[in-house]
Length: 344
View 1 (spheres, rainbow, N blue to C red):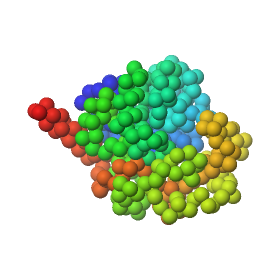
View 2: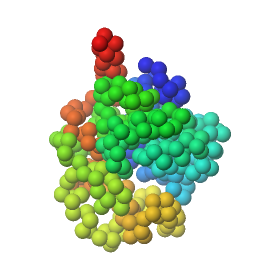
View 3: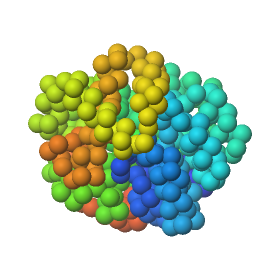
View 4: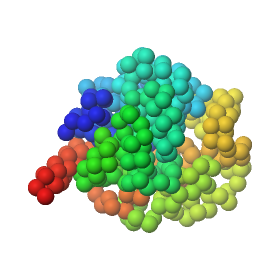
């Protein structure tokens, strides 16, 4: 199945595995790429040396294209961009809108720029800056999310910009891929569905927690980092807002040690985050929770002590295929649906 996405990036199928902190590492990304999808490394929870080694690991495991997801407001964003260019990474993905300067630098180096957005104005902004494509996530999606459903947001943005649109938020099968194509998108991006595969590094006990959830078992909360965040509903999340700033400060110290950042670098990151999202300093301090709370669940295997980002689609997922099985199944179902529609 050839679409604007496959022609632009060189992947075999119009399916993107999104960058998820502590999840989208070398193992998941290379498995996705080898299965024909576009795997995206999540670099926000990696130090610069760790990102370099992860890119090398993926490169040694696959000949297919892959990408790296960046935090545009990180103090070392320019160094990460330089690393990607030096190592020949095919796609740059951004969770927040990148600066016009970063877009120009990546474009000039031949890197495909594909930011993620959750609102029309953000899509129009990055398109005007020269982004090659945009991932549009509806409110059903996990992690940082907006409030507009995918079924409304995607066609709105398709009609408003002249670059390829990849649909995200609520996708897990071939029917969803066909629906996205009908809306005018050139492919789909999935996070939760790829998290729940055998190629995902997430602990098995955490995967079992996800598999036991229903469509109503996620919640959008600002208690994680001060910004709307869709996560699994747990008693830990419900009580998170009561833990206070001292708890957040301790996590900031842990994050500093883990990331290798100095307090000055973390302060610069916080300043950029504060201005970019109009947060108070208290909310910025809360944001230091996020990497550590994700690590507790995704790496340490403690769902009772961490946060588990998740799309609502978790309630429709009941198995753990490999990436190859998942992508093969999606493409086979999509072709079956298209054949049935042609016969109508």
